[in-house]
Image 1: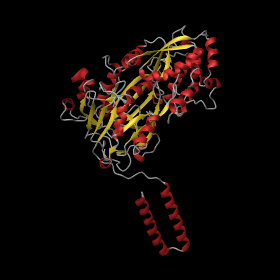
Image 2: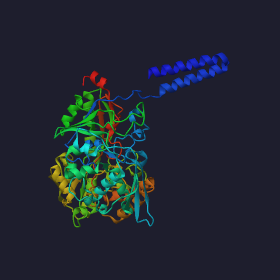
Image 3: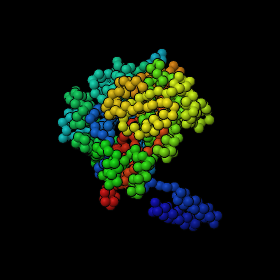
Image 4: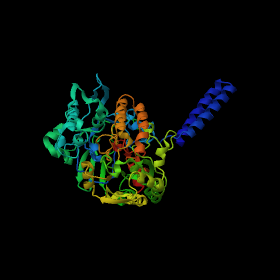
Length: 608
């Protein structure tokens, strides 16, 4: 930075000397003033370091659980699987911080799914339109030429594919299979959550182009499930290996930036660089460089939080995300060299209830409103999250890019009766319980896992004041998911809601979906949501406005008991370069290792 300013000063002085020979005093003074202004501007602008990215090195990061599903369009695709396969499109690295060279239109600290912030990956063009008559819509997908699958000569599955080019027939097979496959494995969840997908098949309409015709009410869901939510892998692997193609890591091969090198169950997953990856660095000193820079990525399985924190402290891992407020202070206090960035917003799973079962307390809006008023959200926020949490977090929380759909408690048009629901008022809650026919309260059971017990113990104590005796049905993760997916809970259950980036396709307040665990079926909401989804096909901003207006009806219903959403943080060592704390670059895409590099000399200097 200092050298750069000095060089600019020297150039300016040389220019002035030459001009002085042929120009008068007035002109000389004018140039002097211009020079001083340029110097001031240079001092004010903080330039990023102009270091050329270097190739090599291994990125070490942690995973909280082992990977047993290697299908790249599963309901919860694991990070190593994402790294080995490729999307049609996803987030545009250059529109984030990008090591100081991006446009900063988005931070990529949280999942974001906005068309204007996307870049084409395998796809060359994606568009959709309403068909004549308005009953259906069509998605058109055109892919690029010259993108090839990775080739590892030491892996028989990869040799079978032969590093061939990705074709539109591959895209059709992947998407048609995802929509219609009835085989039972974790990735094929569409049959239960999206039954409308059965019977929909795309067709080839050009050498590099295909189309899918979707019922108009599900058009944006179709875009999400296909273009946004699935990666492409070679069909011959499924044909050759059948069921093993989704469970055997040796068969996890696609067109991604990395290839699987080694897996040790419950220990590690090692990836190596795909030397034939199509992607290049879009911005900065490394613009045009073939990606990735890393020789590989090592995912270390660390279920225990304290183990992950110790690994970061000692440099065993290079980065750690989802760090809490308290842990951030502790880790930065112990390791002052660590760099940090604000991450996404975290929360304890919120509480839903079977509002669809007539005659139960949960079907009565006054009971639900009483439970809201009997919950001291501000006290919880102050005691657990240092007052940094957001209180109104359902069905959406405030996030950059999605501000237009968020109705905040302090907004001028927020109805007073909704504001009252978020203010602790046990006296008013008792009145509502009495009006609802429960003057002495009732016993209630909530299904949860042990990770939520501490939080809901606080809620349990608060609810005792209005006569609600809350009991816990504590489940292991597998049992909990079985109850949630099977709708076999009869009272209450805790659950996670999708991020704002899943709007407008996923609405946790209508229809049959995993995020509508309160089983909301409200005629006004159903109609308003359907209209909003139609609007969103052509005008997302107007659809956000419609959603925000809908919130005034939705929030009054108190369909769920939300939990404060507090900031999390991302920490990393300074040898991790071209990195600014990005997490998912796009929609549920943990792909930031594509663009970063390791300063191996600095890492050695720091003794790690």
